[in-house]
Length: 289
Image (cartoon, rainbow, N blue to C red; front, side, top):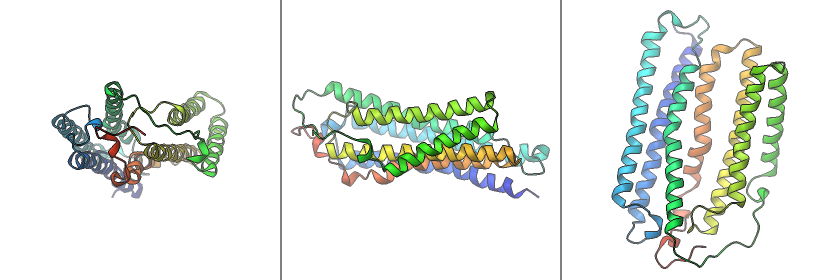
């Protein structure tokens, strides 16, 4: 009979396969197809740097890539149950966290490729922009206009507490330093991207000010949330080591990947509704505002 934590891991891993490589990619592609249908290149030419046919091909390729990764996950899932499980799991239900970790990294590859593709499209959009008129916000963007001070400082305090705990529990050895550096680098990346969103030049030359402000708010809120989730995950991992609960690592790591996906891409998809976006700026006679 399988250990309860082993069954929990199987449930979490199945959810990880479905959520990251099926459900969220499906929503992304459905959204992109809806944009193509409701805001076609013939009426909104500034929105597109590629043909509608090329966008359709890109959407299919993105979906196929995620489907392939999903099926890889199914194969791993079945191997864990029917092959690896025979005599390999410990009596306490331990499953190596390498399984959800390696597969989770693979699942995030399409999201990274999508971000790179989006960056290239916006750069091409800016290169193709011939307009000389711009309307810009005169009001400076301030951090706490976009994210709650309470949430921001809670994330900062939790980060400091986590770093102290990591170094104290590991007595400042290499493992503790690696964990502390990785958490710090992740938060510094959030700070750098957040600063660019607040102060940097908008990659989209046509985006309306209200849409950019809304996007900045969602991005910063997502970063604060993910920072908190990372700190909590690190603290739970420390507790696992202290109280000899390593058999829960695989389950917790699988849940962690899903929470990060929901708190980033899932959150943006839910809150950045198409009907609230000003698409008129992408018409031929529109002035970027």
